[in-house]
Length: 249
Ligand code: NAD
Image (cartoon, rainbow, N blue to C red; front, side, top):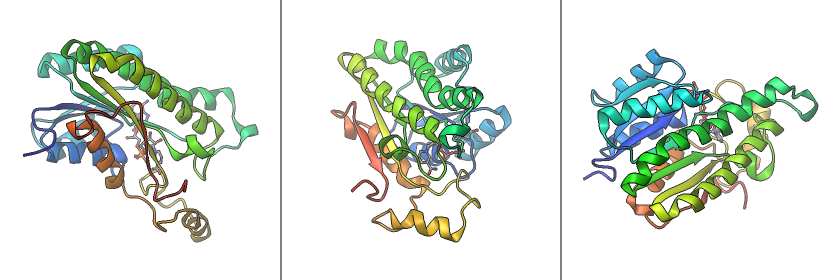
């Protein structure tokens, strides 16, 4: 018996080979959910969905495009008839310092991380409200909580802090309809974002700040998303859950 039997889940940005989204989609499928992987490239999204099994769906969707988000959700509703879970995972980062941030950098990072989270949430809300049931999980970051890191610039911290505000506001607004909204704040997780980009010295500095003295793995984040997506967390909304090996202790 899976924790997500008979559930239909959307995970954005889940086509990346070693990413958090893909690992989350895989765990959801293992727990009985039917999953839609939304990502920029149709072929990559389809390939990632096919890895999970024939019933899963891959769709091209740029989360910065409101119409694209609504039409992807509409397509899924026509096939599935319901959407139970949304994981807003699509995100980008840029390792810039304050004075290096140009308007185009600010727009790009805010658009994907924050605007995309809003648009996808708006697209699923009417369907979740109608059924008085749903769980939305927004992927924020430790960068929102402590300001920056090796990979994220101030604009990334701002975007991910915005995601926390959006999480709490939408959780409050949607709670009467039994639609829960929570945020996950991953710390340093080894994915393609980090692969091959760290010198041994950088790695040493990072690990020195993590009491558990290891990088997180994508499945560490996936497990937390599973808890928040499933009925195990039926009375949890508006929360931010840290998955960071104790980095903020
Ligand atoms: P990743 O680069 O492996 O995956 C990100 C995915 O988002 C990619 O598949 C990419 O194609 C997709 N994407 C980018 N722009 C998009 C758009 N406009 N529309 C749809 N999809 C788009 O990154 P990851 O490490 O797996 O990160 C996943 C999430 O976790 C991101 O939101 C990231 O900010 C967050 N995060 C990661 C870490 C970490 O250490 N890896 C830490 C904290 C938070």
